[in-house]
Image (cartoon, rainbow, N blue to C red):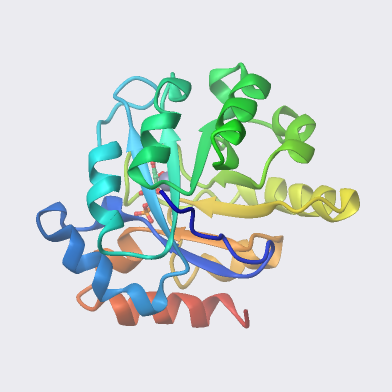
Length: 227
Ligand code: DX5
Ligand code: ZN
């Protein structure tokens, strides 16, 4: 499986989350927003780390036939290491694990050994200090702006202090790490996240739950500012 390049680190990117799409016509929905998609965000929920179940490698493999975008797989799972290989084979380009599950260093190493781009996610109540030791080992830091598990929740503005702290540290260390926010991102909150230092904006409801998802993705990008 060829890996799709993520593009230059630090550039503003819109990553629509398919969690909010109509799963009955996923391929059409993904193709419809292709022009405004930088990365495609795939939310994987195991019913254990989060109280919800979503999709897994077979859906990634199916979508791979319809999109050449970078597949940014967010693994909300207690045991992501058991599935890295399946996701890679299915066509995932990057996999993000959560710091709350522990064993972080080993999991990062396993994902990287498979040729995946590696992300580390932190819930709203996890400190920057919990992810800081791994900044030199990852490609992406995901700071959740909702508690994971469901789409359509309200943005938690307090996380912006942590985003700003992460941006300062990423720049100070000079590491090539994208800073992603996920949860409640829309035209109102995207500028707040970008001002705090985020460069990858995940958005589900504010794109796929709108009558015209392509126009919604465009308006989100415009609201976020110049790329
Ligand atoms: C939350 C997921 C998010 C979510 C975003 O558990 O990780 O990606 O689907 O959806 P919205 O944009 O609706 O908050
Ligand atoms: Zn997500």
